[in-house]
Image 1 (tube, helix red, strand yellow):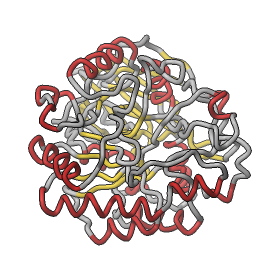
Image 2: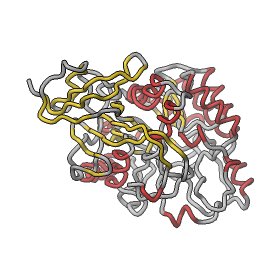
Image 3: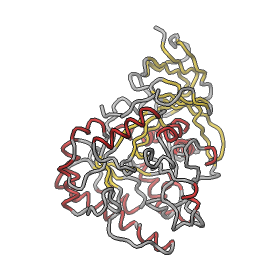
Image 4: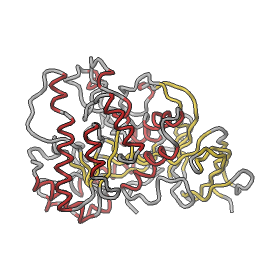
Length: 436
């Protein structure tokens, strides 16, 4: 039998080490992995000499904007950025304009993504003020719920224990995770100084929010996922309550590798929520990732216009692009010996798939989806001007990396090849991604 693609002479991670292999793809799946000389015939052969063949990264925390915020990003530019960054599946957050709260708002996003996407796109839903209004018919098309206690999608929604328990009850009933932006709520005046901004978004607030949801979970059940953990104190709380299928957590690359003191903050280039913390927190997060206290890495890709990011720090919008930097940054950790190959494959590929129950993704093995990232080991620097995302301002500007995604295949289709997109929008990938 002739397969569709043969990725030949590449380096596949076998028992934790790069090993020369060939990967055969057929009908959108991985048909097999072969030693040199035993490969099947193929319609197309791609020579991957000296290149790493890896499962595509799965980013479970992105804001793709679109609809009324298309000036910041849309499904075409956002998923092009994903493909160029070696990310083959993204999951879109619901705090958009309009927010994703019901069947109609979800359908509007799905329809737009189907026309524009270059990779697989999944979705989360917010939760209405009255949880009994939730339309269970959308459950097959979402991968989880997302809540923002500090800034609710529906204004004036209070996240007291009654509300928290009701949200976790939905998670329990429908067997999908409740994703938490861990920060306590309350009315706040606009900060007038950097210190005032930081005092509004403290580690104490992050940890308190996690504690509140854990207390409710102990009564109600449900699956709780903590987004963008940024503090050492939060790590300790998560470690104490660690439960692989019931309590999971993610960390963003900027909280792993950047500290607030690294920047003079003349503008909003390094402004995000949660804010950058201390070198002590960086080290605690890195250790937690090694120890599986934190399950995975997610970019929290949150694009804004250059004008919004170049404003003074206090006036600037919070959030940075991350889809094109996560894989190079994390693979640099591997190539410089601070992270093992097994750890990379877990935190960027298999663990995100496990959390959202994407059973056919995240692993380079026979029978899995042919979502693949091919990477070249080479030294370069991050330059936001070259991003495919509409968002070009990054706090990683000028940072040295040692890995470049050069080819990306989604569902067996070669989407991205050395800076060129070989197919148009709306061809590769699935929308919406569903759990299996």
